[in-house]
Image 1 (cartoon, rainbow, N blue to C red):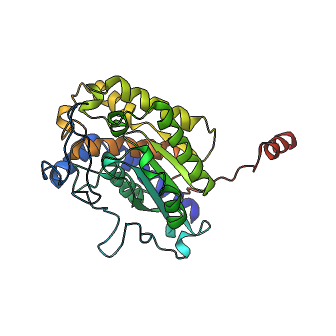
Image 2 (image 1 turned 90 degrees about the vertical axis):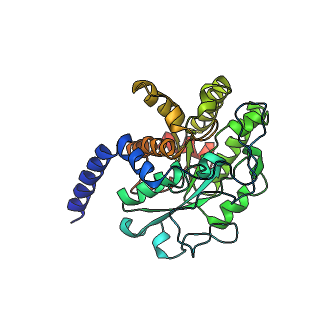
Image 3 (image 1 turned 60 degrees about the vertical axis):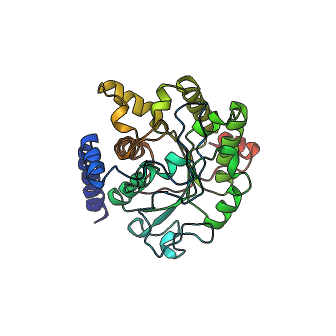
Length: 315
């Protein structure tokens, strides 16, 4: 029975992956509507480094979380996921709920994709459909904020929500606009990864979808920033840390298909619904290829270098 289920799931995943093409995603995005308020309340779009930064009050114009019904809270008061037996690590796969904590800024939050919820929500919704796991998203991304903004709240979120996965998805533009030094940016990303691991959460480091700014004002700086944070994640050499480079994959896709960023952008810093849909499509394929989506379980490591050395010598 188990073998038949596995074969059926593999067949379904392969077919779904083959059919999950940009045309279908962008078509659904178009059907879902790409229109919305041109300017969010309290928000001033930045077309270049000299314009006003992206500051807004949390919740003003932010896309809803499609994984939660109206009765579920996603704020700091309580976790949106249930605490029942289905969340236990040894629960049957078909009954498991895996809680994901997202940190980032406006693109991670899903701005300019009011019905799709943004590329991350699209991704975890798709994974919940394609796998026997339900990915329950707690979105703490906040428009206009950079890596330093969660110093006083991040550990509390980890303790309160107890996520099995932390999705780190900074866009970089807010930090570049705020002139956050690369060294400080990298230190914060390193700290965020380490805290997640210390709380026994797997880490998904996801680079941001491209925007007009990725090709113009911040063409060199944003590329360097994304590459730098990837190096930080890779330096952990930890089986619980995964890197998904949407930034370079999206650039490569546009180049290979001789497409411009124009049809995929809402403004200089944000993708529209079609842009979010393409980013989600690329991310889903990457995750299905290298992340244990059907059994995302934290892998315990030796508690110290001495323990690790003893383990290696014993083997």
